[in-house]
Image (tube, rainbow, N blue to C red; front, side):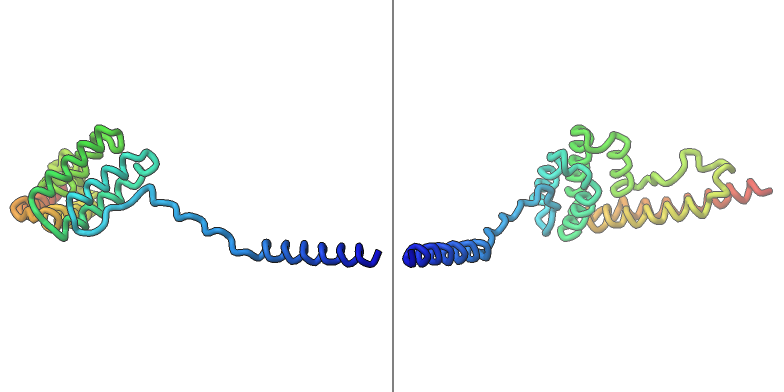
Length: 185
């Protein structure tokens, strides 16, 4: 009887020790989950655009278009070339064709960053109806000029188009001010 009690005690001790050691054993590390929506980084332009297309091909990542576009501008600022303008154009056309952005959005992105034209301007800026918003319109245009500096100068080294946009903005401001002066007479 004593030997059975001893055996039961030993079994109990071994069981408790086993439960304690198993319960305290380190948990298997959770495997790292791969980033399914990588953002282009670095200064290798072709690789950055390839990463952008790969990421945007994933329907779960399409909401990151703006972030990816900004990252590409940053990447291209490390290697500014005129060919980058064509890479952006191709990306915008591809994104439109894939349904990531609309045709209007693609046109607005390109115009905002890579054209001398201003999307911030009302279509008929020579009418008196825009005079109450003159300051707001000019602030939007100046903000857009900063976007053009980022796209045209820093990412594409397109000084000619940027200088045209810069000069056009001065002329537009004069025309708008003259129109509003004439409207107040």
